[in-house]
Image (cartoon, rainbow, N blue to C red):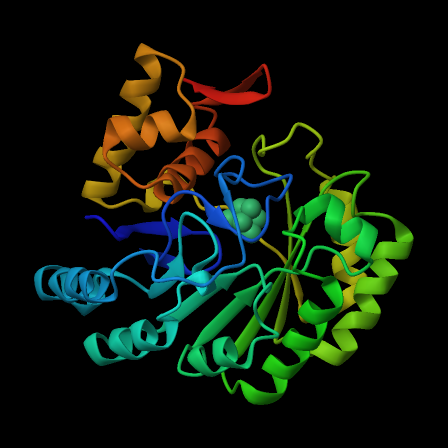
Length: 307
Ligand code: SF4
């Protein structure tokens, strides 16, 4: 599969069939914590990064072969920021034509101030936008955006999305220790939610070494305190375990373990060796790290995995 990955167990979406709309790693951000590694194409330019018809043909073939019950969600995500794809509207409508499975979009929110992007995502069932900080300095430090992207336009874009979009919005905040976890930042986020009115607020932290070593996790106690402060809509995102993998996923898991037993690998090494996309590798590494089968080791700023 070239543009699809999985279905893989997702912490937030059950079994998720990923649709990769940009090549590795095209993104308007270069987040400290990015599990995919550092951004190699740092851009806010919208282009047809992958051919629209090829994506839809691959999805059609998947459902013809595997059936509707093969996943809980079809998810626009993958190797960077999916809203950078200039044919997002056609892809969303095409997916809705192919399957009745609910459609999810993972986005860094950077293009939500563009009315064309908001129109394109109207048929999506659930949008999971990120918002890690609202003060400009902290936003720049944690998300490292391209120069054209400003936090004020992200906030106005998310607010407009809330007014126009009829589906669910699950806002994710990923906390990094000593970067976006100060009392003043949490208070600023609390105020921002009043205008954004998300259906859920999902709290997360760094699970594995990110693109930059400064990205360190906050404690569970910190997340619990923030969850209490943000009320019923707030939840701490939990991890899945390997017992929920099907046969083919168990094979992929084992392929990664076998590769890592032979030599330490980066996410990209594993993607190339195991013929998977980096986002899929990241999901399996998450499981393997949680169960203690693999560990990460940082050498000269590059994260390697070892079994
Ligand atoms: S975490 Fe998402 S938004 Fe941030 S750099 Fe990685 S792909 Fe881009």
